[in-house]
Image (cartoon, rainbow, N blue to C red; front, side, top):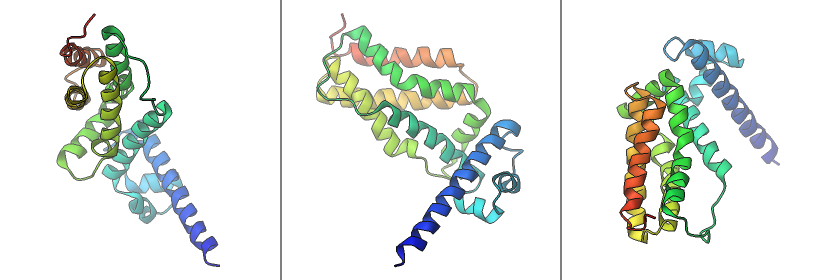
Length: 203
């Protein structure tokens, strides 16, 4: 009896959220994060400023945009079967790098927004899924590659965490302009190569 109005409210709220995020992303990219106001986002989305703030302030909107994109990349990959065959050293490095390269490219090519995102995360003013569920997903993906390269379960787990935290540091460094995309990718490849080579399985 009451399910339809409740469902309708939920759907309207989600529709408003999508509009707000789409407008925020467009305006952030067109005129910059600092220059964009909540009122401009509201006008562009066709909603009230209060509706925008119900979704989040500017920092929360930017974090949602980055996390949403990162989550979409993970979902597009799908699940990998644990029964996949072993891989040789060079292939394992390439497979591990393929997991990270979309993110390194994204951060390096969107410097201003990446810098703002990194600053928000460092300040701790907004939580990001990149350090929660998405982190666990990426670590598990890397661990699977490392295990197939010949590392034992403990080594693969420790190696995946080492690679992941190196990746985070390189992302933040690239976001601040201290590294370009090519340098960040090369340095991450060095870390992956080092971790996999510790298995003694290099061919």
